[in-house]
Length: 477
Image 1: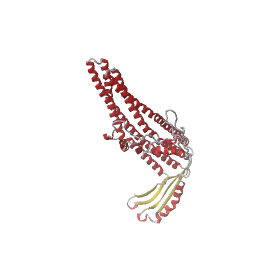
Image 2: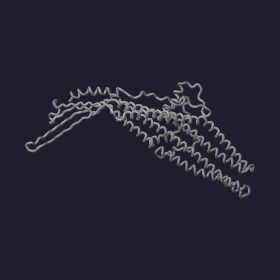
Image 3: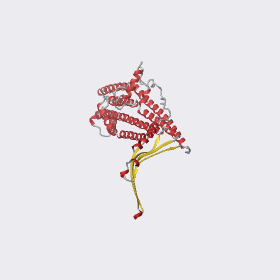
């Protein structure tokens, strides 16, 4: 058996060396990014830093891609909630299992590049006739063999293996995108909860103030000092705030439900924010001076590129189908009618059965498969380019919001201060009889609306930074 295996080993070695020595894959060239090299400029965008050197641009791009979420989110409670989501979120678990499934498929395909060696053993017994004419036959065999191994002379199996590898890598990037998206969704839900808590508190404060004013107005009406119109207007402010309290109470509860479906488990109440005022959730800004090349590191873009490479490899496999296929079946071992003689030299057996299949006429199936692979590859190119375009638009939109939000926030804070002053003065003038109650009510409505708008702007400011972190590719440290 040993000499038989030694005689067949060179053949297997030669075939192994020949495996994948030829590749019919098209030369891969990354498509040029169909977007400008620089971000948009204009009144909506923050002015870029003057004289930023190329090295600084590279560092900025690297910083945006490698800033871990634990570094970016500076609020300790928010970090804890995000960590809970990463441990428990079911969508993320599905994404992880999809990666494991893709890796297993790749490993199955990769195993086809090398021979499969099996150990075999069998025994047989037959008897014919009866009495003196009875004949008995016994057979025993043992050995190892290679069954129908394809010598990959034209790289078909290697191309299919590359395609599965790229599919697996694309799935890995998809899982990374899911993770970054989850972090962003949790942060946004958390900040939204904080904003609605602030709106609820403002509505409660306004309702209490309006209730006191309504009670005073009703007493003044009874005493003949105020009019029925004053009482009706005061009650309108109170009822409006009362309705808002009910609405925001519901909204806060729904915000918590949305947050807990993301975290996959109840959130510790001690980790929940009381409001958005005075809370710093994230870094104040991301690295500046980045070129649009940073988009190439986004996981969805990388996933699309891996899918393109897989389609490229499938073309090579389809081309290889036009060439002959060489298969090998070989076995070496022992065969005997008695176990005592099974492993003796004269019982050795060896079989070597190569076969060649040459495509002659297939009704155009091979050509159709090649046409399909080429069309799929072109579709993958378009998908890759569209992914980059979408990424560019998402970042540009976020930058446009970032460029003006500080001015809007400052203006709204000034508006609230002015509205508060106006309300205080109107209340004082009304109490002294120097102004009508309608003016005091208008000032109260203006203040209430300005406070609500300020919360909305603060929510936009905080959410915009989270969005920028996500659309620039985030990090998963």
